[in-house]
Image (cartoon, rainbow, N blue to C red; front, top):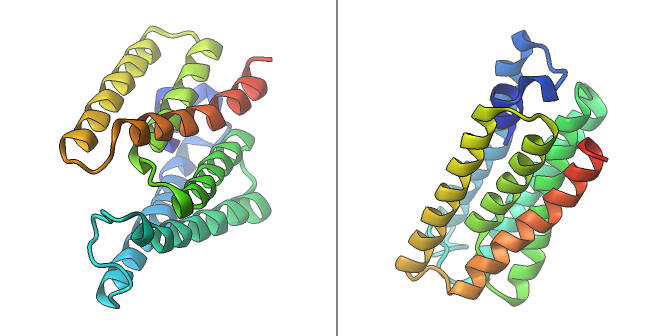
Length: 186
């Protein structure tokens, strides 16, 4: 999503071009590499049986751990850097989505992949409305196709039932679209 902001719609952000790679690297490290290492640590300590997290109960600890890392990243960007409101809102929406995903997972298995895809599609939808450009429209279509392929793969691999895939997509889209729309369009 940050790549979308920085490179697909550069006019949406005030982050200077020279700082975008550094910011992207920092976000990638704190929201991908560190949680991945935490997940591997949970696997080696036998808190989880598989990195694929097939069981609902096994997903709670990793999702909670990732939520903590995203919350720390959001706090750092908000209180220490505060370089771009839209970037902070995006990080906040992803963090809220993860926290809600974790809470829902306590009771029901829901697709984290589709939650991410729903949020990404929502953000690109609003960016398409606000910054009308032809390349962004094709990017929007690409994300729809990717979302369909990922949802289909989750079903094909028996990782989820259709209701879990749909609910994940609706969760991500439902959280991100109204906030982005209110921020950028209204």
